[in-house]
Image (cartoon, rainbow, N blue to C red):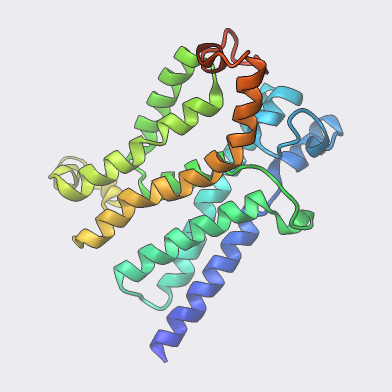
Length: 247
């Protein structure tokens, strides 16, 4: 019976994560701020960058924050639901990972807009990783700003910055970093990795790569388009003169 309860709570957690991820932030902000359907302008992508280019800087920042927030919220809500049945830590971690993937699917194919293509899920992935590996937050922001200053290409910057999460997952799981954090900053107890199980640590290293592939794969057609417009010049395609340059 207890196992069945865990199954039911896990399924409920994944479904709710999908519904949270389905909140069409870009569509709502585009309608409210400029009265446009963001799916019919610019790249047609229902994500923060298209809002940034076609609606404005602050609306784009708002959408990016909302998209990341719903990724973190989905995993948090899923965690609370799953914890009602006091599952083993490995089961809880797997449910959290499934909730994250479900939230990305919701963002990319939102139920509230007829399951049609939404965004690519980049910001939602970042929000999920913020929750799963919170120690990575300052490092992610630092690396994002650094790469963005060099390339002036937001998409490449946030993808490259995501690499800090598997690196920190490895550091927390297979070095003394966790113990040092607990001793030095006890208030940061929430940054600890799950238990001491090597399988959990390995999953936390692999998981960022798995969910990163979703927005990257969906971005391939756009990459080909940008590369073509840059005259098939890799340097010009990657390094932009202006952050708002839309090749």
